[in-house]
Structures are given as structure tokens and as C-alpha cells.
Length: 313
Ligand code: AVJ
Image (cartoon, rainbow, N blue to C red; front, top):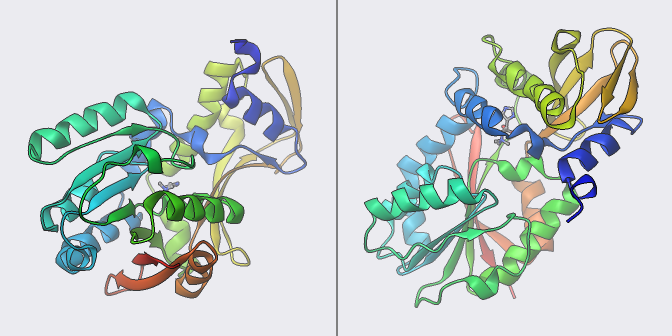
């Protein structure tokens, strides 16, 4: 392996800083520090998605379990701490197996082991993979119940249109003709709620965003001055998404991996899209990938939705 050319972080950063609108894919926000800052975000008073989705799961788990049926194989995409799926597993009638899919092998193995300790009779079969990868189908255990995708957290909102289409189509193929899929998606709402959720008073989200610059400095030999950039959360109404940006507070030149990048004052690096996808929009995306929306569970304020899709033939 040629390390110089096989570092996808380096390639994404150098290519992203070379574009007219500088942009770095949001997955690079999650190094160890970024992941722990994200955990802090989920506890913030302004950040409603995590606690709202958990409340929907707790309130509606038995209804979800009825819709899933007995002996189901649950496939969780981008499985993190496995906290949310426990609520579903607790409600299910004799689940057939649980398959968490995650790119981070060490986190996946330890979370899977903790889960196995608490559910000794459940077959747990972790798959180390990017959740965007296709052909998981061959690795799935056989059971008499149906196969059910589970993708909480509104992580789908970080993807672009064509990535969502590819993900849903792959899942349709991998999970099979009798499949169901439960997915959590943050809903469109007033920017008065959305903007503070992504720009909190304590500055945790700002630290989460700026940690990307710290990571670039450390891993790619960058010289970003963190005090010369500011966090911004921007509501893009036309695309129904919150965008995170890092704004250059002055004209400056930054070097990364020996390359130089010019910033004008107020120029930004776009670091994340967090799309808010309502029912009709998501139904159309699902339909194009071979799924029909069959159920929707929401909180009383309609902040967040969990949709169930059924495979169509
Ligand atoms: C974990 C991707 C769903 O988009 O709300 C939180 C990430 N970014 N605050 C989101 C995030 C800034 C979060 N997701």
C-alpha cells in the first residue's frame, strides 16, 4: 500500500479545499474527539432530535414490534452505541437475529459484546462495513421471520440525493422481498428551532465543527488558526437543510500537507448538510427505490418522524 495516495481523509480535504465553494464531507467530523463532542450535543437543551426520537421509540415500540412480526432479523445501519435498538428488541416477539453494521470495527465489536451480554439468547452477527456498501445480503443470517432494516438518528439526512437513492436501493436488494425498514428522520420546521439546535449557547456544536480543523492540523500537517474561523449554522430553505460552515474571519492563507489555500474574509468551508425530509419527499425517494411508506410515528410536536417502509415488487 502506498500511504501517500491511499489516505481518503487527505484526498477529501485537499480536493475539498480546492473547490470554489470549499467543502469537506461531514463523516470526517467523527474522530475520537468529534464522536465524544457529538455525544455531548445529544444532551444539549437545544438539540431535540436524539431525545425526541428516543421518546417516539419508547412510546411506540410495541406498535412497531407488531408491524415487524415475530422472529425478525434486525439489520442496523451505521450502528453506534446500540442504545436505540434495545428499545425495539425489548418489544419484539422472539427476534431471530441482530446484525449491526458499522465501519468502526473496535466500537462495533465492543458494543455488540455489551449487547450480547444483555441478550444472551439473541444471535448477534456484527458486520464491519460502510453502511453505504452494497451486497450485505449474502452475509445476513437466515431466520423464519422477515428481515428488517433499522436506521435511526436521521443520519440519512447527511447524504446527498443520489446517495440516499443508492442506499435505499441497496437495502431493498439486500433485505429481500418481504423486508420492512424503520428509519428515523428529522422533520422540516421553523429555523427558530433548527438554527439553535445547530448553534447552541454553550458552543458545543461550534467546538464539534472546529475540531475538524484541529484534526486536519494534527493528521495532515495543517496550520489552521482556530481563532481565525467561526462556526455558523445556516438554514437553507430551498434544499430543506441545515448547513454547517466554518467562516474565515479574515483574508488568510492556510497550508495543509504542503499545499496552500487562500481564504477571502467571510469565505466558508461547508462541513455538513443535515437535511430535514418530510413525508411526501421521503415517500417519493422510497418509491423510486422499491419501497412503500406504510407507517409513520411522530412526537406530539411533529419534530421528528420514524417511518416504516415495506418492500414492493
Ligand atoms: C448525527 C448526523 C444526525 O445532523 O443532526 C449534530 C450531526 N451535526 N449537530 C445531525 C450533527 C451538528 C447529526 N447527525
